Image (cartoon, rainbow, N blue to C red; front, side, top):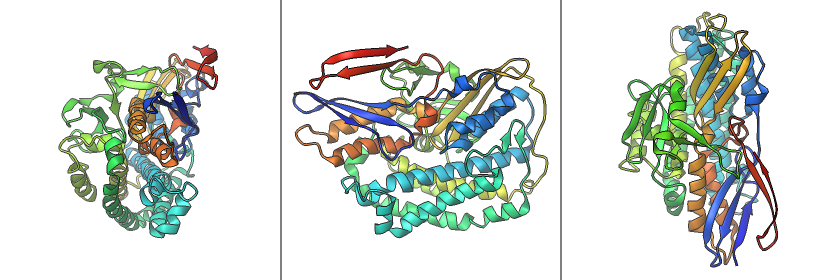
Length: 474
């Protein structure tokens, strides 16, 4: 007899979701779906607010990556002002964004995923956590805690606090950097690099033990999207979009990200509040693409910093074209962490970093503005429209996690088909289904939104699967 397996909630991710796996009469997986069950309507909540409040308001979308929203929102407001941002303010914003990516990647790799990598996918769930990691490899646990703390301390030194800082404002930042704070941040660079390099060596020794997971964790051809510099280097703040296919061939390059609506569509699925963006020229769902660390390292010509470039060269040896297995998001995160620290050091050593010219002031000169930057999980878009008084009329935020919606669903099905068998359901099987979601490091609180139609279907099912009642919204 067919049966349904429900994993509720999905653990060791940010936000609320569940997975349903449908087995056929022979006990084989016939379908598997990832459902995001929470909803936030920030785009409606901000209507009528003064546009200059948007950075600090939208930073509240998420407690894990508030800086990402702060940056993208401020850039959208810069576009509304139509001003030239002081160069020092741009550098300071980049340091803040890089610190955000560093601490978020540390949280994902060390706190959420390293228990699976160190202890194994089949380990006792009571021990498969950071405490279990500390018991078996104390240095690994300490490095993770230290690196996250270092990133958060940089955020606090620049923005005034670790969570929801309001330091980034339309036109730049609210106050300049002082020499003592710069020196405090620089003092941790060497230690941070040593800890990341030590972790990279450890990861490169252990990921070979996960051959089945590498082959099945969302391992399929897709497009990859992210921002790059004019020279094709990794760019987290102000690049143009590049899209490559599964072979690494460039499909679109140096695309102005403010034209995103011309080539990105947003589909709605009936069983999730998470939308499913797709590449319009290929249609839905064939236009599946991925964003985030794996995508960014797949589409660049080089990283752009010495140590990270060397690690990236090794990473690219995994495949002839693009690296397709989402398992290797873990590898990509570590390389990006190295890049972040190297870039932070470069910016902090710039001769103009202590300049007090850090903000341009103006009244709104446009009624529409778009801000784009790279968040830890991928490309983030903030799109605003205002009236002549500077009040918000409309907002759309295309969140990094949302871009990966189609890929996460396809990955859940791929893993479930390989590992789940109806005759005997083991915890390790289901942990692998959750673990493929963890490779993407989704941030679900901020990825659900109110732009367009948001239907939801709720069904009451009998034990045999018969639909007893149904309510539809939208």
